[in-house]
Image 1: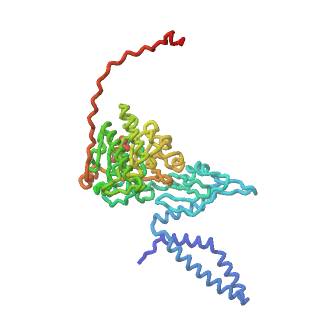
Image 2 (image 1 turned 45 degrees about the vertical axis):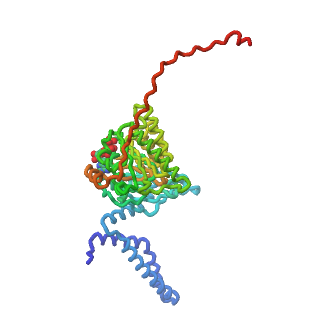
Length: 469
Ligand SMILES: Nc1ncnc2c1ncn2[C@@H]1O[C@H](COP(=O)(O)OP(=O)(O)OP(=O)(O)O)[C@@H](O)[C@H]1O
């Protein structure tokens, strides 16, 4: 038997008060009609009115019962929503979210019914003409304080379709691990959790750039990808060609998951160039047959996974190798997606000088970064304005990131699952790639005999005879 708790009574008290505030006039009308009931027409109307009022009451009761929050959290959220709606006109006025109308009145920014995305309250806001996104954006800090939230951000660009997101708790504050070896949906990889507690599914298809300072959790993204793809890797539907420019420290532990592996500069460049050759031959094969590759074990999707990309594209001391790496990378990133060659690269320093082909990476993941400038470089100014503040991510929450998908949707705050060494060892044993192809360094062509430098030819003088002729 359900037990009625004092909290339930309080909920019903709230609902009844709300009903009274909105419907008191019905009782007044019925009371007046009761006084005039001696008139036959009023009597008939009164009968109908009472029946309709009773019907309305029953509908209200059923709806209120269904909507009544059943847990403590739901009750808390409902109270916050209600208080927010009640306080909005005052808050909007004090923060200057209003304009004067031509007739002399004041028009406030309007709000709709709040909804909840985990512990984030999404309040639809519609601004009057004369106010813009920047006005609302400028007040996010004060709005967060006014409504007791830890952080606020604005989503949307149309003044009548904006959402103020007020974050009440950090759903991603605690680390967690993910299960691996799940069946693959052929499009995405489950990498962690989103702000609302739902799984974070990273699209596998767009070339992806992961940027984060040292210790921000890049390794958990790299391993999250590998473990998330464990099953298709074992089935040979996905091949991962790994480049680890940290000298193999990062990827070597899970080498059996990789079809190809390179740790030094020379092999890394050869691996990239091999990928370009394989990509081009597949493009020739598919030409005229299809415009989009479908992964099979005979023709797998190849993920070129590069950890510490800048070591190859910017810090490499051998200029020839560096140029070859940049060229191969740009070719892969500009032509690879449709034929199933995907680049997934991580770096610490997102400046253009460290990665000339940065613009070719259409999906970006920004972990903790040093400053707002770096965040803008990785995710763009629009994402920063929408609240993707990588430089505000706490060092205590490695793995927390903002993801900017390539489909134009707003940036998403996520946290990657923690991957432990034991998980990597276990995956390496149970999900090895069906084939492993070493990266071969071909013998250098014999150095041409050094010729003695010629003595520079003296410019031939024009003879007087030639001149005169
Ligand atoms: N998703 C995560 N959840 C919880 N802790 C994490 C997560 N990712 C990483 N960590 C912890 O944070 C620390 C640093 O992480 P990690 O090695 O991944 O950083 P990194 O960005 O690869 O750094 P570097 O570039 O210096 O190698 C590690 O001790 C790791 O245990």
